[in-house]
Length: 312
Picture 1 (cartoon, rainbow, N blue to C red):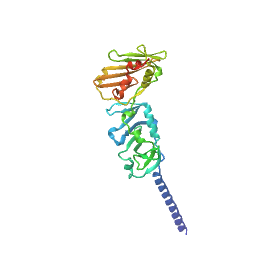
Picture 2: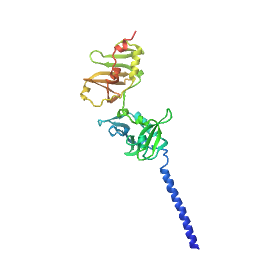
Picture 3: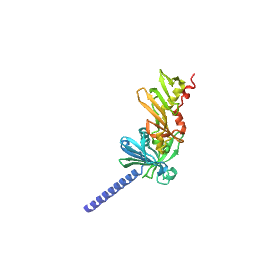
Picture 4: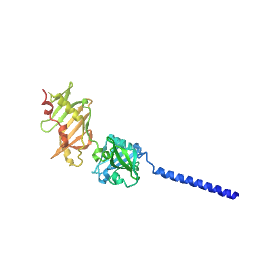
């Protein structure tokens, strides 16, 4: 009798344990396949490298590397140049704000439709050499008016999620998008005089005196002078020139020196050789810009007659 009771107890215990094991197994399995509430989990202060493959193109890969407190970007030429902190901060802000709105698909069947297959833009984030984010960014989702969403998936996950934002437009940029585009960034109210050094006898100095601007001692048209100063005080450009014969740097044809009231100065130089005109600034010494494109050189190196001809 006692043996039968013991066997019965053992059988009950076995059944209870079996049910418990089954519940644990299935609940864990369900957890693994549940809707992710987070896709991005990175410590931006520990990030050492960011790799972006626009539209899966290896040849267009963008490589951003942290060196000390500064960020560098690798150019196609193999040269590394600085990437401004503001651009890196904006990139991090975009990445950490990638949050799933809804689960769009499970499995690989929809990858091609949502462009999260080999056509995706791949974004990898490294912390101390270890990948802490590997994200595939697909096409944007057509939703209600004025809402831009994007399909994404984690590289090692089959599930596709819909997230807020037009991410493909943000990440499908050229390497120049992450470079320092500044030529002049200053407050024109702080400037005391501008020295224009040109070929032949066309050089002159623009000087402020009692709140008025004079070009070679001739009173300028106030609106023309103010408009010019404002137009160059926040001047940027993305027409970089990286490959050129360095001998051109021996031929500075144009030079603008902006002198400030506090004795600081900014120098912008135009180098000419044959049809090539390069612009370089003391504010961004490692970058050279095409002075012929977008009328950049004409915008900077203005002739004196443009400032005084309209004066009455």
